[in-house]
Figure (cartoon, rainbow, N blue to C red):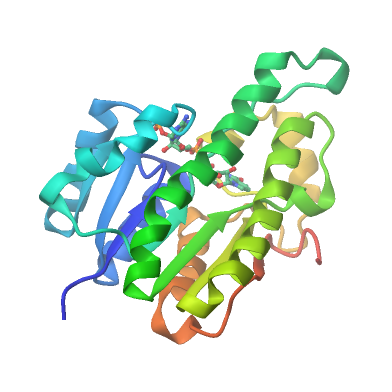
Length: 242
Ligand code: NAP
């Protein structure tokens, strides 16, 4: 049987890189995205014969529209989509500029809509698909200084549930994976005081690893998870019991 193609957005670093690596080891052909040609080339090199890197900017509708042209003959239409890429632009509400709000919502939510719509048609045609969206623990907990990011991640969860119901009859599952505090560039931006206060709130007493998120994604996209849809899997060391 031909290898299934898995599209992983934001595969150049952090959680996305770990997911791309894991899905390649699982035997899928992985298309990983980065925002720059250099990042895309690095993904190609890291994946070797198991995948390819391509450029993608989620905040640019034209970049999403032309994604399939850039993939070209390198891969089949993705049957697995991991909407991983996301950004933060933290600020207190009274100081939050229009651009900080719009950039985060445009990348994390509008971009996810654009990519999902693009690949969904192929999944519907083949009557099989797996979509995993990256949410966040803060979508349920809230987090001061992140109203833009929290709004986008809560919306991702709602979107996932609604889409799951819409496409279930086509044998396509849609789930959210909601990480807590994972060691990546995104959390490296936090101050020492913010990191210490986060760690105090985690019963397991440590940050999570990107590979621990990747293993949940690996499970959800596999055949064994075929009866799981419209759910959120929390990976947060016990920080929040949803
Ligand atoms: P990260 O290390 O900051 O990496 C972000 C990834 O997204 C990079 O591959 C980046 O590409 C890509 N990206 C950024 N802006 C983009 C855009 N406009 N269009 C397309 N791609 C873009 O992030 P991470 O910590 O691994 O987080 C991955 C996902 O998990 C995100 O959705 C995040 O919200 C979620 N999450 C993370 C944590 C955590 O503790 N780290 C917790 C909860 C949820 P370039 O390398 O080209 O910039």
